[in-house]
Image 1 (cartoon, rainbow, N blue to C red):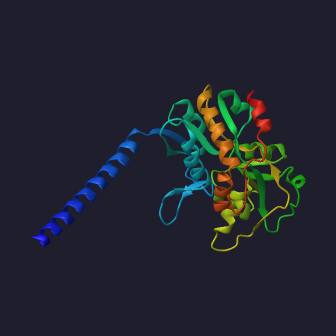
Image 2 (tube, rainbow, N blue to C red; image 1 turned 90 degrees about the vertical axis):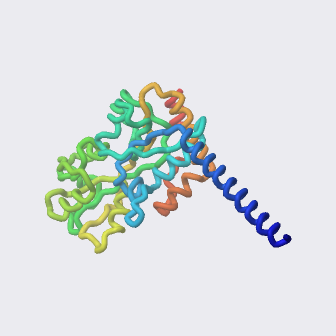
Image 3 (cartoon, helix red, strand yellow; image 1 turned 180 degrees about the vertical axis):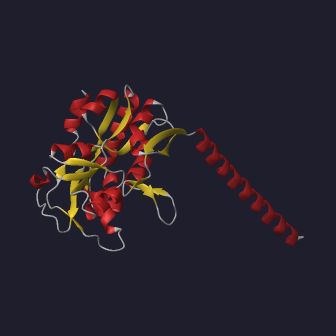
Length: 273
């Protein structure tokens, strides 16, 4: 009789544990189903910002991790969802409601500000210059009259033109570096961290080098549709909070080995007033 009672108690405990697990799973599933989705537009191919891990195919990168942290501070139960597309499609996807937020190391320019609203910046951007190993280019002044391998629609392409260069259109860093190695372009202007990440991941050293001199870029902000005041203000608060408590610094250190967070938001908050 005692043995039967023990078996019954074990059976009852197992049932209760299973019921509790099912309840917890059901609650989690219900919570996820009820979550509001905020769609971020990215390319999914821009390491270390946003890219797919070679082994797991999981979408990773400092912008991916950042977005997941930022939505935790928004009103309601909000989940970050990432919509991958070509770079040229990101901003126009805000116009068609395909995405809610454009997030791809985008800098605020007068032309873009006419059509879209920008948050306070979240990432301090600096551009590096890649040239051939045997190039006679040593300073930014030497770029005048040279051929720049750049995406035409980007701010780096515009900056290269300001430096006096003629653009050779490309879509990827791979294309740019190949053009430089084949002597069909003289330099490539791009994110310093992106360039270093690209060069570090090559199986063999490439016959190129990075200039010591860099170009200060306008820091990266999130971009939202014009008139999205509530969303922009909530994102501003979250960016500032996650910067000041060191969350973003930890994310940048994880992927870059350095802190690229903004040190002072005052000038950017003044722009909003």
